[in-house]
Length: 477
Image (cartoon, rainbow, N blue to C red; front, side, top):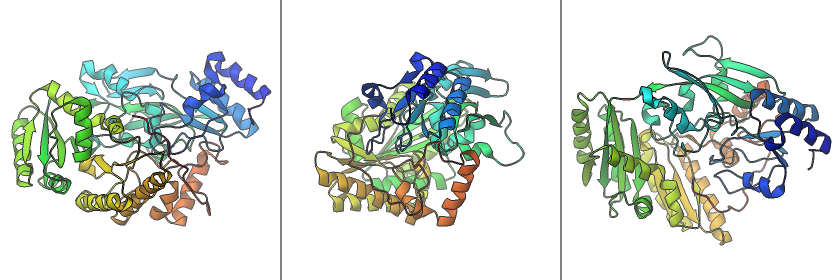
């Protein structure tokens, strides 16, 4: 078991119990990657603590031996964030899955890190509340993983990403110390240490529970499906909608390639001859909502929509969102493998970046589908390839890197919600100077001086040469 000798193994088993430790190679293989299957690595041991006390004791034991570890949630990440690089121990928080407290009066909920995202909303919806961050994987992804990656989702346009909804954290530092950051109030004095942990991808320690904000359910919705002859016209319509003074709750785009895959999989009535569609969701008080929707319909028609239809009822609305949120799974019908990117550009640059993506697709001779959060410029180009063809593998990797570089050149970002992980670590220098990266490293060392928590992630080592291995099969997520 490598650096996990028999004495340490027995100590860890004593802490978490027989059901909380996995060491057989056949069982560990399940944990060799997340949704980014380009690279794979199997930990020497997997630990599944059930309480903060157990997790603290585990990290204390590992600290005494100087052993690095990698946190893991549900494994739905898309950047290799939970890949065990030089980290023999993997610590999965999936058994820490209790909703500890619900405070409707103050619109707060305290949840352990292994609670599934959607379960938070399910626990409070009978009282008319919901938890806003809604990644496409929300039926499986967990609060701890959402915090690590600062996850978003379709409704990010109105509500923001995870960091906008986390008030306080219980964090176990790499040496086993348990600390409380933030609290139950909106604003606190001093440095925003909660903000430093959210999105740090597990490099500051392991979050065990979080105090989250609840939102009041809107009185009603209007969900529109706008059809366009091409993606360029659709993305220009996005800017026109926002410029008109309207900020929808969600504004999503799918291009023709994705439309065809989704329609074949789910038969939701998407127009197969459309170049692109926009799903536009408006919400708020019932009074005036129809007028609000009519104004948006006028705007998209003026922008060049070939048709606009309003979801007739909640069932049709749910069907449209099913199509959007399961689009990634439907892509498996298009190619044996795919790699999903996560770049961001200013909203007005969407037409330009789609031209770049189309050009990359032609030059690399690879199909690339687009499904993304158009309202906030968060792209998810999906590069299709066949891992049985080594040249296709290399072209897929290079194509993705070229798209990310173009995002940066347009004033955008390497990631909107998937994180850096190992996937984009080689591109960090495109966005940050050596001094920027040094400051990030110094901040990390405040929490983890020896870089034992999720080593090899987010911040590239000076002089390191990052090379991505051959991609493997991409699983539906």
